[in-house]
Amino acid sequence: MLRLIGWNGAVLAALILVCEIVFGYWFWGDPLDGLNIFRGVTWRYDANHLYARDEPVIYRRDKWGFRGQYGEPADIGVLIVGGSTTDQRFITEGETWPDVFSQCLDKNGVSLPVANGGVTGQSTQGFLADMDLWFSRIPNLKPKFMMAYLGINDIWAKSETHKYKNNPRKFNEQRVVTSQWSVLYQRMKMHSAMYRLYRTVKGAWIAWKAGLAYQTGGAGDERAADVMARKMTAARAVTILRDGPKLRAMEKKVEANYGGELVYYRRNLLTFVEKVRATGTEPLLVTQTWANFGFDGDRLYGDAFQYALQNTFNDVTRQTCAAENLPCIDLAADISFRPGDTIDAVHMTPRGARRVGDYICKKFLALIK
Image 1 (tube, rainbow, N blue to C red):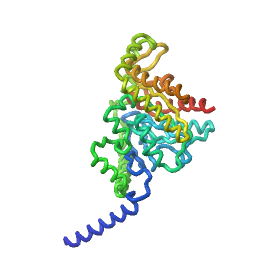
Image 2: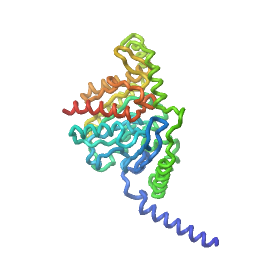
Image 3: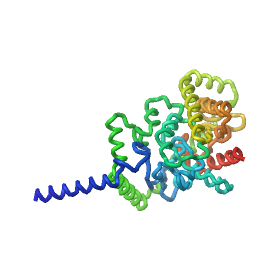
Image 4: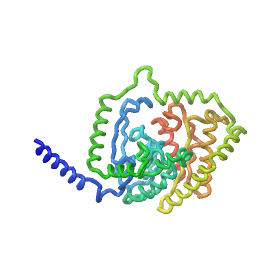
């Protein structure tokens, strides 16, 4: 009996070894070897606790790590980079702001297929790493434009956590890898055919569960978007002059306390612009805003210090655009999120994503005329 178990175990081990050699990426086949970003995944899950939705969210990344319907890498006309506000993990296929932007281009007869390369937690430092470790290894990838939706994550880009998040070899969008063994373990999983099979089966199981046990939210449940909407409504009661002395004082405080981060951001922006242009692609920068402040005429309502902080970083973006003669879409100057647009201070609902995607499309079309 033990001998039979031993023989069966040996045969199984041999079959696994053959499968790994033939179907794994140990010796050939994967130009993105070593990256820990999600690739080749399709997930379905409930987002009803975040905003009202009757169907599961479908989240898909192709073998190159991109979201969106663009054909082949050689077909990509606009490659969008950003953090979680671009990746939009909890918005289904076809409804993210890059999807809305792409659909708007199609409706206006502009043939520039769009790929979404957003990665949770990334700042400009991450974009630079992506260009070296990710985009440069994708065959025939040469977009006409590289659009960066940026500024929020750069506030904390010098922190130790964000240094890991900006390294696509070490950060897998689920947890921070903190040791060389962890890095090696993650790479081994990315090579393994059996691990890909496990992920496929697990994804199918999750999808099946989501389809049968989808949570609709009972009476008394309050979704994240509703909580945020209530906070945004209440924030309108607290206002200061948009260009008044209180706000100027806050901006001076930001400049004093975040001087190193601002220098770091400016340097990264200039390096990003230089590297993108060196590939024959046109860089395009888009400023970001938050939902916990906004404007009503000449009054700023909500978290004034958060506005001062983000606007100081956005000013660096604006100055870089002017100095480098770059196309720049200043979303932060024109868009104030409304109740129902977001699930928290920065992450959008599909309604917010549509507003952002349509706005960026309108400005983009004006730039390329």
